[in-house]
Image 1 (cartoon, rainbow, N blue to C red):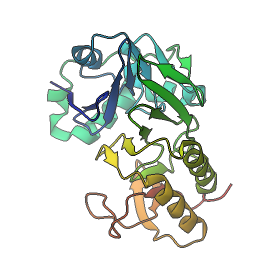
Image 2: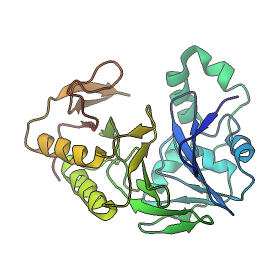
Image 3: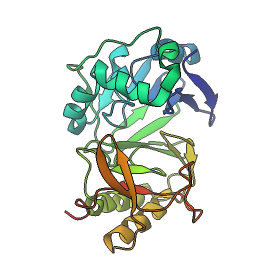
Length: 275
């Protein structure tokens, strides 16, 4: 089986892929919401339907290759339209295969033997906007605009469980250097806005890669990291990804854990720090 799952709260189930992405299934009494849709491989819809008999709605954190192309398997899918062009380029079969070959190595053929969902660049998404609220039946999800990683990045507050799901918008190795990412200065403003908007509403933070849960101090730590970068006080560790040269704000070990014991980290371009 391609995907695995385990419960995180009374209403939230973690779904993990072999290439390292974390998806979340949030179940209410009459509907379930799948947060992110992965790459359109491994028969995600069948796996999700084995976990819930509820009607499904899909909410996308953003349009990148490892989060959105699997939307082609589902009918009711919401995404912020600011990521529309990004999705159209990232849903291409070649992009998905390249990503998985890099991440799965020798296991690629074995794990993708059942094939990929056909690419759907013209997928019709429902608009996802800041403050939008989804009633699943006793469980409510609020969409929270969190631009920076991509223009249309969104977080989701699962209100009853007091969980904030930040996806790739804020984690322990936040990419802020790929095409479409904002400057560090603009991103810092976004993190501050989300922190203020969500103050007192969550106790736990779930993310989309590596360890699914990070400390609930993550936003405060990220603001501090941004301020250090803006002041010229980051550690500026060189980093290369798919031909792009970038800098990591804080030194890490081979498991991407910071040597200072803190959590938030930022990967950014030296020429895109201020607006």
